[in-house]
Length: 196
Ligand SMILES: [Zn+2]
Ligand SMILES: [Zn+2]
Image 1 (tube, helix red, strand yellow):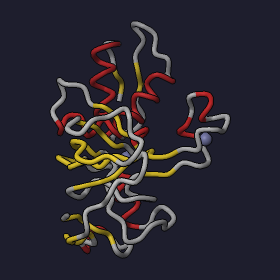
Image 2 (tube, helix red, strand yellow):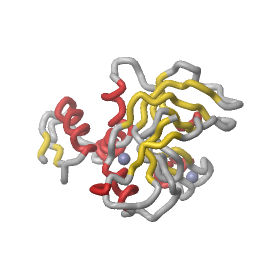
Image 3 (cartoon, helix red, strand yellow):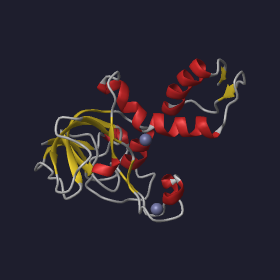
Image 4 (tube, protein in one colour):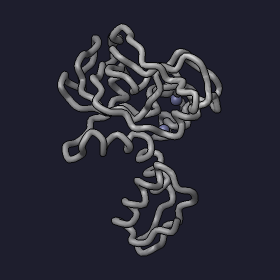
């Protein structure tokens, strides 16, 4: 497959991602493989590429807002089918046993692993992910509309819900990035007034 590979941490101005031919990844037991149609860009990708986050896997294929179609499945996969459209997000593994995983707060799990950081992500033709961390994408979204929901949308929607906005109340958003550009649309539809 072809992929955009980061081999060394470097400023983005130096174009550190290199188009590279790699062997097709094979799904392990419990994993599915996607043929990727698109992958949105997140500020965190820049943090990975420029080394603002501690160095993990290198070389690495960044990208963690991945949309594609399942084209191969490892042993034991049950939920998804070949040909189904799915998305892959930043969070790709948690321990499944700690108090956070047990209480619907797996984003706080100490055993979490991230797409495009601990494992290869979506700037490629193919990617593998645990079936449990592949999200079915409903009809009604184009691939490119769905992709930003897989990080910007998840992060923003969680913050929106935690702000517990009341009907008729104004919602203030501090800062404006990819999460805000998704959530202000939802907030305007649901609540009516957004202050940026
Ligand atoms: Zn992100
Ligand atoms: Zn956990």
